[in-house]
Image (cartoon, rainbow over all chains, first blue to last red; front, side, top):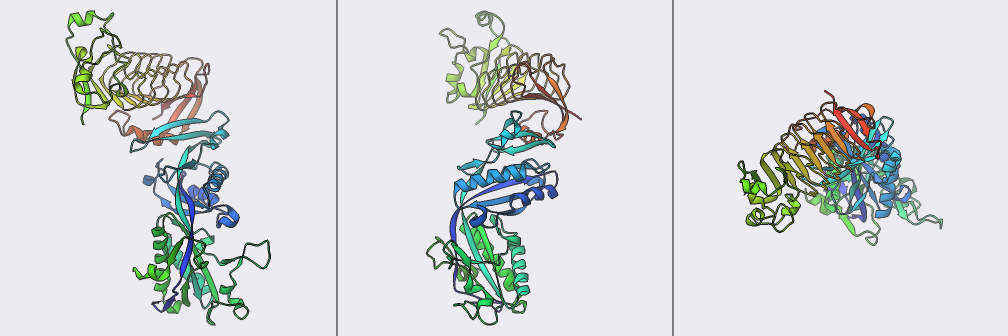
Length: 305
Length: 233
């Protein structure tokens, strides 16, 4: 399949079930909402080493937030509910509680609730107070007011936890490192406009795609040598002679359709750059379909345009 | 469904009035949770007191409407006491004045008082919201456990006497007793949420957006985690 002179491989991205949550971070202004959210989503690129994968989903206008202040929404994903709960509480305590003027609210409805400020309240040392306030639908929500040095830290008691999918991906194969990076940036710019997804790696792009296993017994993942351009003559490579750089975009989302949409938008943005951009192929990472239950077939995704 | 409306009869029969010790009418059984799932006939024959010869609702009120989750008292005056006693859900709107002990031992829901109220509003209240457009009598929020009371008019003495937790929102600084402490002026972000909630009701609190308040904490003779917030202009 060719789109605007760029080959789309007949392959699929393999993704896994995860648990996800959304938190709305507000502050006195957008600058401090970003400080809080950037800290909270820092060191959260991959569950392999960080416990969770997290990112800023989008900016929120003051009219969209519970306390009518500017904010951002953060999505956070983990392989299981226990890790997600632990990581959320830790990050709330170290990144949101500490950030001047920041407040945190539930960003997703679900029967499954996980703690947002439920335990954080004890930082108030007995001076914390709770308020049970109904939302516009008449549903009562509990909030905690924790006295802190800049005034009061306002945090909702819990937020929802939902089933989600992580590990949607595609690979950008280009004839130069700069070309791959330019294409990846174009894709990320387009994909950031899609709701319910995050691209958790630095700038949304990962250059160190991995394969399962290693020659070293203690390593359970190692470099994806089949896509490493400098190993073309040494390994069973997936790369043709003209490929010099490969970059990957990994997507976590709340549903299959959300991830499929973001992949379509991202790949389309790259294909719009055309052949002259230096991008030769779009491929995807999978494990032969044996590990992840969700398969994002590139031809099916791009065929629906 | 229309709200269940209890219109106080203007000229109560002397014989009926003589059956009670005073001219006070105890409304403690007239709450959404007590009257839930009753037909209009059952409500009319509902006893004001849980006794065999108790007077019925129809002896005092004209009854209309069917939605027991929202009860409206019309022609209300200070005779009506214990409005919203132990109520746990729904809404009561008092169109007029009300007597003592509005929202006493309240467990949830909302009471809107469009007139003045008597003494001990929200006494031992644990949860819920009481908004008073007029003035409140003395010992407002006495022994309050938690919840929120807003008084747009003035409050008489000993506001928050013995309160453990909870929030009292006022527009004028009241006379405070010694165990209520001044915590200074603050901008409290949680008020934005509270004001949004207030917007659901037709009261003078509608349209508030100033989060700047003078905060008093107390009652230190009890728990001291309650607060009296006086809105600053």
